[in-house]
Image 1 (tube, rainbow, N blue to C red):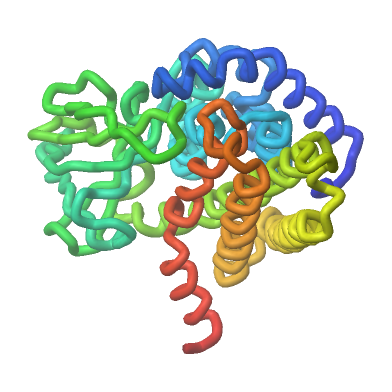
Image 2 (cartoon, rainbow, N blue to C red):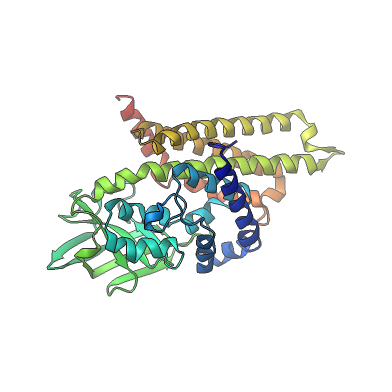
Length: 379
C-alpha cells in the first residue's frame, strides 16, 4: 500500500491526513462551487511543511524527493481530497522546478521561496490555443530589446492562471514555431499581460484555469530561466516528474473510489440484501481492486527509478497510461455501483468521475504517451 514504508513517511501520511481532515474537507464543496482555492490554504499548507515537500531546504523547501511528494498526493486523495485540489494547491510543483534547476539565486529569492512559503502563487504556461501538445511549435515569441524581452502571444488551459502572481512562460526566442525556446518568469500586473476569462471545465472545479495574453509585454532579461534557447530541454527534463504525479493521482483516485464503492456496497440494501451479497458486485469490486493494485505497483517501481535518476522515458509513459486506464475503469464502475446517488453532485464519487477525465489529457495525452512507447519499442 505504500511506496517505501519508513517512519518518516508514515508521519508524513499522518500529517497530510490531519491537514485534509481539518483544512480541506469542511470547505471543499464550497471551493468547487467558487471555482478556486483560497490563498490562505497555501499558507496553511506551507506552515506545516506540506507545500515544500520535494524541494530542497536550500531554496525554502521541506526536503524529500519525488517519492515523498507521491506520499502526499496519495494521502490527500485517499483522505477525501481530489486531483483538482492537488492541481490548484501544488501548481508550484510545475512552476518552480525549472527555476530551481537553473540555480539562479535572484529568481529563487524572488519567486521560489515566496511560493514555497505560500505567500505567492506560481503557474506554468506552455500550451497555446493552436498548439496542443506540440511544445516545439510554440508561437508566443520574445524578441530581445536591450535588457528586456518583448513578448507577444497567448496561452490557454493554464492551471492557477487566474490566481497566479507569476507565470513561468515558454516563449520562442527565434521565429514562431522554430523550436528555439526559452523560459521567462512574467509577473502579473506587467503592462500588456492580461489574464483572460476563467475557463469553465468538466472537472477540477476548485482549480482555476485561465487564458493568458501577451501584447508587447516587456520582461527583464534577468527573468530568463537559464541560458537562452534551453527552454525545450528544461521542459522535457521536468516531464517525468509531472507525469508520475499525474499517474499517482490516477491510481490514488482509483483507490479512493474502490474504498467508496466497497463501503457503499456493504451499506446499501436492495431487495432485502446488501449489494455486496451479490456475486456480480463482488466480482466487479475485485476487478476494480486488482487494476488499482497493479497500476500502483508499476507506478511505484518506475517512480523509484526516476527518483534514482535513471532515464526511463518509455516506462514513465507506460506508467501514466496504465494508471489512467485503471482509473478510468474504476471511477466508471464505482459510479455505476452507486446507482442514482452516484450521479448526484453530493456524491464524492461523482466528483472523482469528472476529475479523472483530465488525467489522460494533462501532462501529455494518452496518444502522445503511446507514441513515446512506440518509439521506445523501436517502431
